[in-house]
Length: 227
Image (cartoon, rainbow, N blue to C red; front, side, top):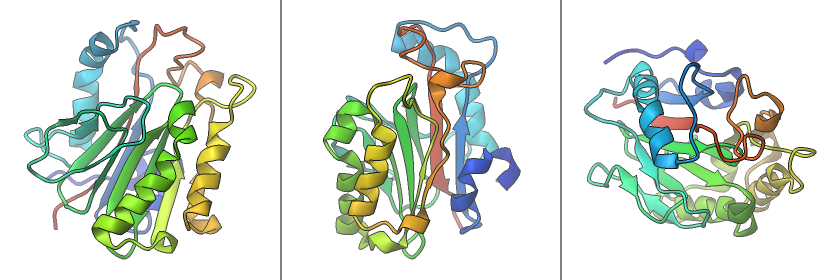
């Protein structure tokens, strides 16, 4: 299996990657040369080769593609096992404690939050924008990890990926996500926000709001290599 390097992933993911040699995470930004579209399915089809390559570069084989959430701006959560469908319908968060499975979340202004349990090695990856934050998807995902894996919130490390922020958006859901994570029991020094705004740099990121829907999708990936 291909080895992945810490330096192949954005520096803001270092708080995750430095605590576990088996953990793999990435955040794929705008892909140059790929036309954007107002049709999400068309956009994802165009980005699929680049996103498949990203998964393989992390060390996950082509025959084991990422597991994705449908992302309906809700707060439901799917427990991912080897028998799960590649697309979990009606959910915005994925959790697993199985090594060899790669979780994927698409965003284009909403927040992708990475969760890693240092003790049990369980993972969570969720999509939280305005509606998801209002429904406390972060707190619910942490509760689900506790229920399924015995995770203690104080053991979790959380990293928030680039997302839209004021003044480009009137709702500061990045701050909401942080507040919900800390309220759920994540320690303040275990919570890391990259502070990057997707709407501030269209050369790096897609922004649904700034591009008025004619945009691509960024990709958050999180998984553990099999031992």
